[in-house]
Length: 345
Image (cartoon, rainbow, N blue to C red; front, side, top):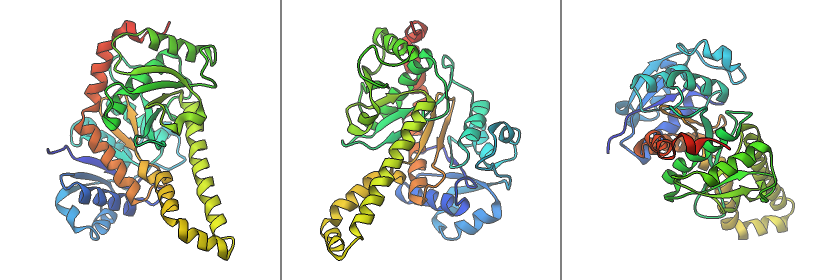
């Protein structure tokens, strides 16, 4: 099956062109049907492509030497959407020159540009940022929103649940993903009024392609007990960074422990297969690629510090969403529920 090409913002991320091009090349080595529109400084992209001759026939370059800064205000970046590599990559999706866009740049700017260019789907109030997190089981868990919307009402949370379930069906294969709202407890009386109202609406709604199972606490996110975790962007971003920080803490602690003495180093050699498995499972590059759900087009946000493997995974996420037509899946689910099913009581 042929895919629309993927627009890659080659200037985004901590290391820019070299890693973005290397990541795209790695994705193509895994899937030779991938084609790319590489957006950024033409001279630097051509120099990077010299190390990946297999990319020449699969890539087109769109020149832009204007870059969105990592700490640039979204409002300021938005005024340069027509000249920056990020803005041009997103606009390529709008114009039909690419099927999806991938960027490792400023998250706020990417969301602002994507909303302006692609618009939110009919029936949705806001898009949300969703990502996959590792669990103790074979399947990852979809979590949203992770920072696109700091404050959300009950209706927003219900819509996020519908979008997250549609995404989970693509990545987990479950026909009815187990969906829960992030809360400070599992009792029905816990949480804010908006969380309780969203739960009531999800229990009462008909036509949902999910199994709504109430609440989940933050310490259970990675247990594999649910497929979708729904929250506002403020809580979600804090929870995500706490999880990432705990993962780094564990790996750093193990590193210190295994290098503290000769006996520890011998112990490391004996336990190396297990520690390598742990390192692989906790490596954020293996789960890289957050998605802006709810837009009329596919936009994937790569972590700014991602290496080539991480960028390749983000590209593969974009391709998978194109293959499974995530945009129309969400539209179908929204239509199936109807306006009355979305109304929070």
